[in-house]
Length: 592
Image (cartoon, rainbow, N blue to C red):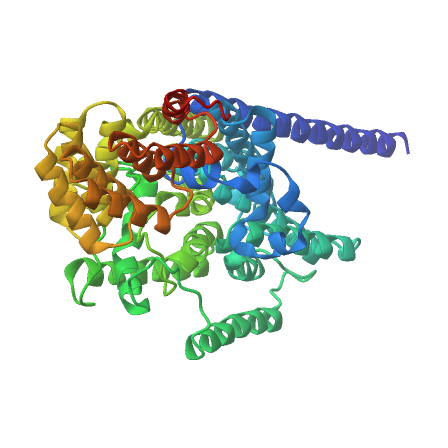
């Protein structure tokens, strides 16, 4: 009897030790994730706002207070991406436009996502879900490094360092939470109502934050196929077939009734976009393994035929990868098979038949890196095991290799953050990699102009003009460069070209009027100023310049009237204040 009691006590002690080890391991892993993200992204915290940050932050009136967030309609108009905008409003309420706070919040969101990757992979590696002994024996190593690779992979910079793309990372936080709640709902025997309720809330928040979360049914299907089993260890085939059939039916209805969305800025057909993605998907896969040539604006040409070499080879690549996934599944390597299918599932919405203006963007791979991060430690341990048989040595060598790989990812991420330092560094990098694309040439020209290098800016503007001479904004900007160099005739030529492309363009109307004013063609200048004001009554420049014209021609009452209009729109306008005072002193009035 005493011996049995001692054996029982030993079992209890071992169980207690195992529980303490798990707790310590989890704390250590989460601490490493937090430290890794802070170290890797600390050099990005002073980086300037970039690209779409201007529209979504600097020009976004929704974030100036919280009034819009009290309107249910604002939340359920998913195009607003209200949860992400709410975080921007919180940033603004605390620090205004201080970029440091925005980057800190992005890093915090990324930490949450990385910790959830750690939790989620722990679920996937559960012995009840994965029967492969090799996988379960190395669960802790795989789980920790899967999350660390996700946290520091250089492709994540576009979703972390690029402030506005917190929409991607925040959506994925809700996305993973939804999957975790779904898994617990299906596995646990108690609290099912609470778990399915939390699943629905997290799923809706994910879709509200970014509509790419519509891929959630696909990843739920993957959970059912790969990891969710009943008490007998069997898949619920009826439920899987029902879910799969529902997805196929929804796709067919969407196609036949033309209900599937299409971004209004996209100028490609569904077929053209699909063919382009056959080129893009292999590039995505290569970037996961070799993150060389990262670019804010990849130059992907729209294919004309399925039989173009890059398109056809991309199709073959996808078929082979799908076949490999099926083969791995049949041979018992479920985890590697799942990683491949996860990649296709999470990119499916933006790499299929739903056209988006940008054919390729790195931030779209943010969710896919979960699968990549999970596959890498599995592959490393499998490869090392072929050379090292002794268990302790196997673990030591595998961990060393994984530390080196993770450190390399961190190093590349730190370097990529330097590229994101400001507009000039970002677009210089992009135009070197996409020299024949309009936007990098245009944007690097803008950056050089702001930095005070008009001659370099002009050369890139002219490159952009050779690529697309039909941009009225570009023509206006070239005119501005020539105007700044006092080359009035060249400036006039480009302003006229801008107006030929868009006759009601207020900036070009005002700028051309300025040329006429300098040439003392007062009548033509007056007409253009008035037209510019008619097109945009809140555009201060033509109102001010019309005031100057009237002042120069001795029409002081009309000049004073325009200066007062300027001050109504811009009370701090010094030129209007000074000239109005001069006019009032001339007339002997002091009408303030």
